[in-house]
Length: 475
Image (tube, rainbow, N blue to C red; front, side, top):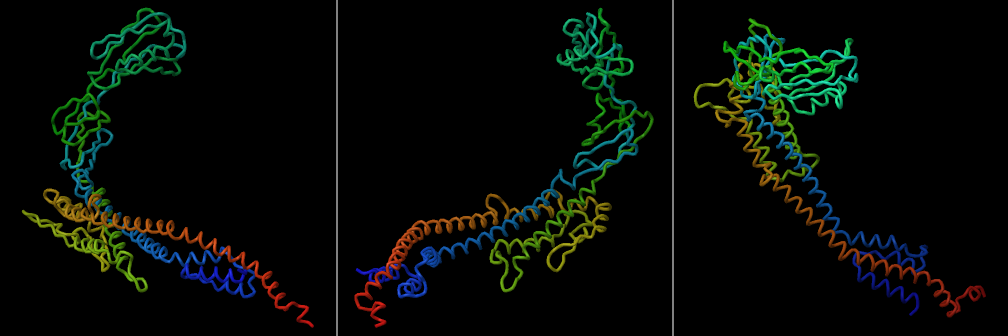
């Protein structure tokens, strides 16, 4: 078979076996067009691109799914942040239960109060603060001055007597301090150096009368000791009740309140006022408004037309449901079973709803409500038994964001599964169809290129046989 016949046969088989492949460039080369041959790489790539049309459609679907996943994850995050706000506002240890304590004389005593502590006023008198027992030796030249052989004893608060030797092995103050600290005697020894020289200081690890200890006069040696401070309990009265404390941090006198005794001031009444922490409450309510607005704004984006289309989640029923849930939540009304309230709805807190569903908070109105009717504010969010506005919205949000079966969790799992299925289809299509097709086309087009390269020689032979060479043409 001649090269022309072989080429025609090859091109004919290629055009019938590979649908969608344009072989016009090959035919032009075969019939003497200006092209000198076949660009095999371009021809193969062009054919493969046409054959990959299903893949392109699948990849476009993946892109849409990824956009949906990103948008849904953001809305899930918005809902989670808002739900965290509700849980905080509904917590007995959260910002609405936080307390502040104001002291009329913070140089004498301050205090802190645990969440939920009863608000009120308490009078404290600090007659004496707790002290920590300490002893000091007489001075020697320096911390490394050799000490004469001898010994002294430390008698602990529990009556345990420990003998400390000086001289061999413990020949300096530094050595003595190390020995005492390694014996776990409930005291700490250190070397103090000043203009008079170096002294050994021994201090109890805890304050109060029960931690008092003694150091005996030495036997021999070059050290002598005197007591610098005697361990004593703090003495105070709280609302007229006399108390003693081994520590200057006093608990138990008032439920949930910790007193910090700073200085003794006998006869001085210090007023401690325990009140709700309106600053923490304000911050928490502002955070709720901020997170609510973020959620509503992101939801609104999905249902706002941009050009001719809405957001990628416009048809997602869970997203539409959440938007309706949030819009409905703002109409919550607190109706106490008994008595009246000054805070029956969000408006009472200075929170109004704009046309687009977002909220605006009037700081002055909120501040007035917190200062004047704090209990009503707390009751609005927490109800009589943690069943108020915060719990109501929390329960509704949980149905969307629950890690186990929340609507958004299920949605995202479905999107992920669909993405994975499409990727599997793409991988299988590449492996089982595109890869073999690429090899086939590479082989066939390469053969066609070889045949085209042989055409000039074949045509010259034909012309010679037909007497159509240049010499005959000119005669």
